[in-house]
Image 1 (cartoon, each protein chain N blue to C red):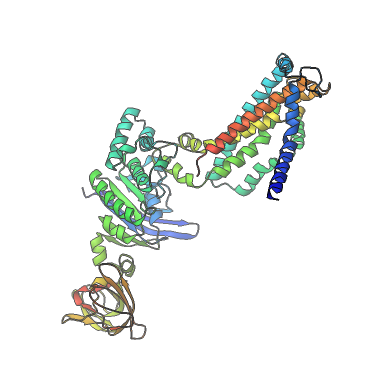
Image 2: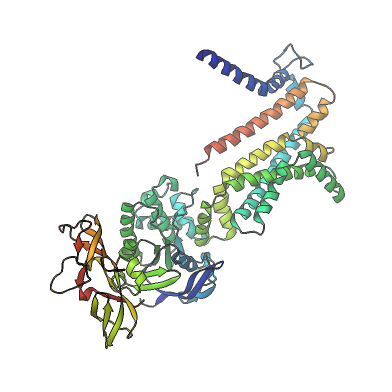
Length: 354
Length: 260
């Protein structure tokens, strides 16, 4: 299945005078796991609310399975939402919580109990059927909310920062389970988060948002390796950024002139365009070899031990030069104040047009 | 020295509780008097005056009237209070703060003023004085109270719960009936029982707005006009007993309430 399940076309929205979404278009494929990634205020939650029917956009349309749902109430569109605070019904048992959507559809009790049991089994909580929500832990409540949203077989399941309230260890564990459950049930998931690790781990399709716009979208591998914009290069993982100017554009090879010399790069750009070169920290080296290009001299400003590697920050000794971020092996001894020569291999340079 | 202070504070506490409860104790004790006057010496215990109360058709019908007025008027006040609290908490209304202030304002106005105002209105509307008009009066005084209690408990954390219900296909009235009402049940119950105790004891409005059929406090006042009598003590003790029961139910509900 490759046809579009959801099409959001040219969505614009504002709260009062503050524009939160400007001309955003997004396509969601059936069976995919889409993650909307962005800092707070980027419009990702607003976009999810518009898809869920809790907000009607000022402009644009929402098509689900080809049906225009733009102004349709949440109850009447084939979406369900897992809320950040879970929003379980505190006065109902877990089983009744999960069966609520079926009850609203007029499914008889025996059938909805059976389906609720099934849904709870999928999230690994079969034994909790008769418990009340307040008897469950945060992670368990999360699963009940997921089962409650899944049991009505929505076309799209929406998750609004579902792991935000959990501690780090539980978050990583739930993250793996979410992915497994999504593959098992085959429903399209749309997940909002500001955690880029979460996004990379979960997404089939990663959408990076900033200031009401989609900065970049694609597989997380592609977005990480070839970020489309300066923002996604710094938000989806870190990068060292070096400004430059395109001097010779010839076919799909260009030359970018920077403060540290001109570098030939395989990319398309106009002659004279202002661009930025990005280098991922794992590609930034502090010891040069025969193939490396160098970026002048720098002085180490911080060294952070992170278990399997050291994260080194260094600032260029040239005036208004860039700050460098490198991940280096633990064996390499580096101290604050050391003079280093940042360098990288030329194929690891990423050209950002914007 | 410490023992002395302890003794002093004990005495002080006894004095305060004595001050509050002595009249009630005297009332209850002399309702058990076996002779015709509720004055010392105590000649009981005897239930003859309770028997007299229950055999007095005026008092028993007033008791039933009071129960009916208290039950029905507080149910209406709690229902209206719940709906208005829900409206103010969940919808953006023009002048919401002013409207909320206006709805709770009658709490500060004397019952006498409210009663007189209602009397004028009912006169103008041609509605004769009756238990119905007294009941309406009790809704007027209890609605602000019910609203204030329920509104204070209607937190923002329930908004997402209601949204979730809507998202799962619940229509608006089912959200209200299956989600909001059960979650708000402790606050609604508390306001209901508090209104019942207020309506049960209320005299001024009932006095102004009833004529032939009347409520128990008004009937007791009628009784008092013919002088002190252990019968008035007995009926007063019954009123007190019902208030105590209502207050205990209220306490139980409030204590049982889950921490939010």
